[in-house]
Length: 290
Image (cartoon, rainbow, N blue to C red; front, top):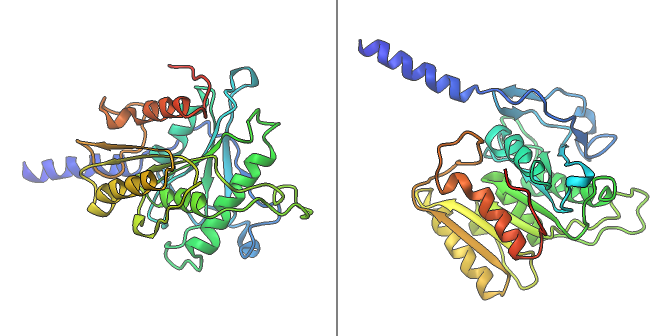
């Protein structure tokens, strides 16, 4: 009887681990037409999937979830999934949330970035993953008219490892190279707001006046460097007079992400708190509720 019980647990765990991605994912857009700098020779290698998780990313892309023009609020968000820089958790930290935003008039773009801690990787976070992140911000800004987006309402959101990228993008950015022959590189890579969902490596984050406003969410039962780190980070923003809002959910830990069928809880409803904050901050004029 005990062995049967164990088998059921293993089966259920496997079903969760190998959950499938939605079938109607929009076509991804390469960030560079000839391959990412330093990865051109591997640009045509196929990505590898295990359930909802993606690896072997050598040609970074954006997957666009863009509302119809008459439904658009003009606000957009680039989503950086987590996965410890060894994989991309595209399900509960990617496509599901992008659909939620799109259905409420907010354009969302899921970023597949190069993975610095995947087995055998030669990439680094600062040289490659961040190049992908900044290129994504430039691309969205360069195509704002096409996607019915306001160029001063482009935000970046990241979960866990992706939260690191979002924070670093808000910390270090530039106005673009106006003399570049590449229209994308002419654009600023400064996000207009940052959304940090249980990001790692908060000890490496720096804060100074004038940074983009921040929305932060984590579970109180997460690792101390995340739960306590987010409280400390919020106080740094406050001291620097950077507008910020912090949510530490009492009954949550790491990885709650967003699932449309999640059990009702405060943590499960964090996207609603985010849209309220965006409205309060003047970054979102209206949102259709569903």
